[in-house]
Image (tube, rainbow, N blue to C red; front, side):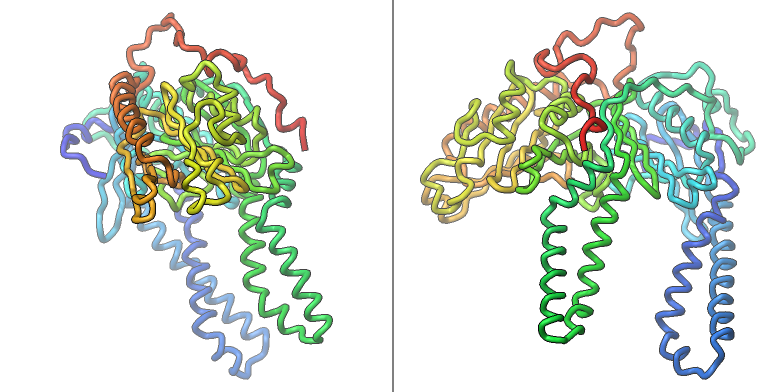
Length: 513
């Protein structure tokens, strides 16, 4: 990411640092694995036809692996020698590249999330990668891999503190002088203590396994497998089972990825934002600073309705539609847990009856709690869910409800609304209907409802436009702690109209399987 306002003088005030010396070794296996896969793919038929002892073939494969590892180590070492990073009070910089040099920086006031990721090999060795997400999109994000785990945590603390507007009393960037030598160890700036945190919820393995077992995909895989086995037994043709082996393995791999990625999912709050930790083999710890959530979606599949579970995902600037695990705020939450988590990312619900409005958005129909729903004349276009699809404006957000069997509720804060689109096909035009789309930051969540009354939506559009304008004017600073006095008065607005406790006293996920 480049910015013409960043001058050479700004970068001269930054003391540069290198990634840890073990980085080439941790990256070398990727090149070796790639070369080995290509070799086996291209030479499998030739190796099978060569009349050589098995020991000789194994030695050839071992030689390919060693050669790939050495080549990968050399390339990784060269890339490491040309990579350096540094931070200032305004930005974090990354210079990299061997043949094609890249000089990139992320403004801290545009920082969205900071992730500390530990793949299995790096985790065993005590190292971590730092992923910095900015509002400029996926192409503007920076990854620093690898640092010592403690150094990565210290750098994360420093970035979040500076992004919040806190100026450390002694930082290496502030005390650096032009032409200072580059350091090859340490996180960079002076150590900053980690902000205290308060635990909110932890997802147990029992609930996670139960949610996967009740998902439609698992049920479909089990039914398909049972049908194939029955068919093979009756027909005596075992080939039909093997023919479906690849799709079944693909489905199994997907659900294993869900289980391993969301294992031991924990949520906590701190002054620097919402902290999420997750992972079985590869652990991830990310921090979402205040005000960075652009939209929230609560979704429920038909089988989850028996347990009252909801999956909560968010849109965050910097995470594109290809991002999946990073957009999950909580994989499996009850309605009470969902209400509390929603109050963390959207403090002021904008209605004196937030829990009743939320319940109507999750499980209501018709005009419950003031929702405008699809008119009766639209039942020819939407015969099953027309009463369940609706829209409601509060003082601070727009709520979009849809689905009868697969229920969803999407919340977009007014200050995050970029534009609103209305679409009308020929049949909708004849029935005086239209579809409403709320445009915010691109991501997994696409706020949209279909077949609404055109006159009602026109009035709603005027209200939404005015409230979005006022909300952007009253929005807090990007650096949320800049200029804050130590004894500043707390926000006079009660969270969720004061109906939720000040600290999480709802049943913890660990109490339920």
